[in-house]
Image 1: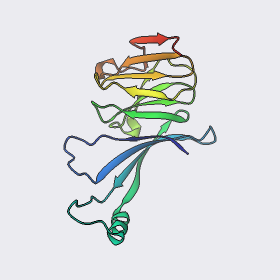
Image 2: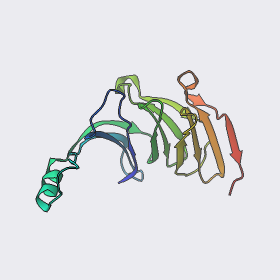
Image 3: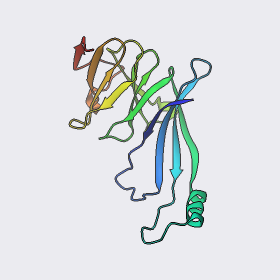
Length: 171
């Protein structure tokens, strides 16, 4: 099963509207290994000048295709996965035991793409979001009634990252 789906932002050089990437996270409930997976998706684009018919709709569907690309082992079920808006290869995740993790998709498996653990979240939760105002800030919340905010700028990433601030006791 998949509990996390996120579009990977296109690179600045990518002008194709039809070649896309999805990031998904598996949720095996501890029955098997879990992964972050990248899926390459190709969707045919519609010509707005052409009238849509049943036949053209079927041709459009038949042109769509996907392929499973890279998969990265993830500790625990992936409850949420979010791509950094400022750096498309930086991904924050939240797992089934409340850990918030940082992955650098530009690193190979041999280089260990898991580049940081954000300390401060405890317990199960699904809340995880990058800031729209400061694209290197990520916030997470869960069953512990604490919202933690971290700075994930390159020079702040480490094995154990402390939050900038914790907002405690919200309901």
